Image 1 (cartoon, rainbow, N blue to C red):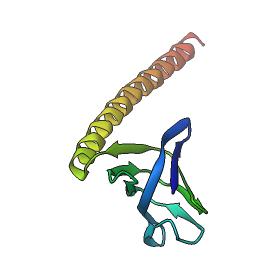
Image 2: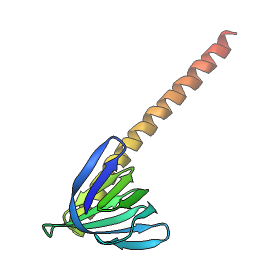
Image 3: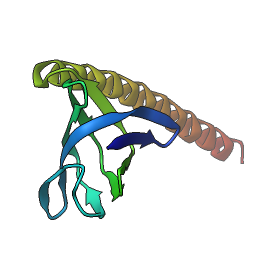
Length: 129
């Protein structure tokens, strides 16, 4: 099968695979080459695939849509993190969460500063009236 994983801004991964395992809203599934055409809504979780060369690839994915038509499998998801094993995937996801948490913290601090400046300027206007 030909697997293509799309993120909103790019093609994240593409290759030939023997098997795809994931979790959808209605439960876990496994796709093999002879599987009937299939479409499902993915939930956040672990997505696993086995390449034709026997390499296991683990992805932590956000919600998305998976479509299998003939020999082509397409996954469109908001975010994905790849690991060679579940352990390496766990470490990568933890690092990414730390980065996102730091970015969120900086954004919240900037927003608080803007709000404080707005209130201060608004009070200054009231004192001039």
